[in-house]
View: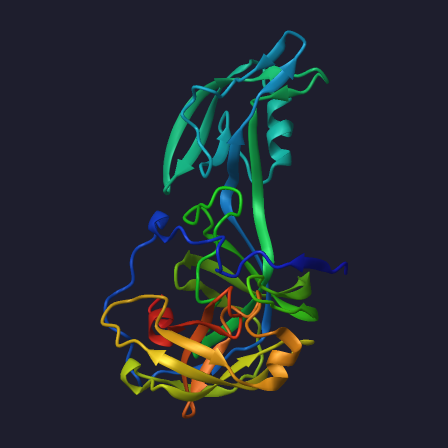
Length: 338
């Protein structure tokens, strides 16, 4: 099976900061019970996420025999909308557009879109470009792929990963990306972090190695059903937010191959949050092995579990770009509420 090499798209450093655009339901305001037990993650994941259709990334002109035309200029369609149907026919991938349009008996057609989960229709006309192709002048994409880290799997088969949302890199839209799959991944190499330049894990995965289905994407991570049957996970208790203290802790992450290891860190600051927020802790990487190999926190480590006093307390979410040994982590309770 051909492997898909990915140069990480999904850590939240600078690219995915538009949390106000979330259309998802906000989590409740109290952490989960401290007696919760979960299976510890730390494994690398291949991630593929998309929308229920194709995502509009822009409106463009179409060069025709009569000059440039903009069929969708005044349609009201904008970047981040999701095209789901053309003349009642479902659109799943970009190639479906030309397949459907080439069979239309008329240039006048109804296009169905989603915006913030709500459908709306637009009446449009295609034009014929210089190559004889029927075009609406809508630029689209279907999926985003990348490498991240599994945080936990619950005893009833639900997973949480990343500790932050995934947004489309072209539109910045989060809410359209609602479904997808996770895969077992392999870390082939590391590009070290430098001051003012984040590094990355270079990973690969095969679509034949699916281990779960993504059901939710919000500011606390990606969540869904873990479908792989196995018993190699380690059980661990989760901590109450009041149990998290400044001091020694460990990050459980994978920087080579597919097997995670423990690396020492310091929790520099632990916020006493009464409502959900992704920046629950400030952390510092202190383990020389990790610093020598990665330079600190790198793209792809998002979701790596943090353990203190034998309990799962949170997950890595952000890196300080100017000081890559420093970063933020989210409290595990906020992730478990999804």
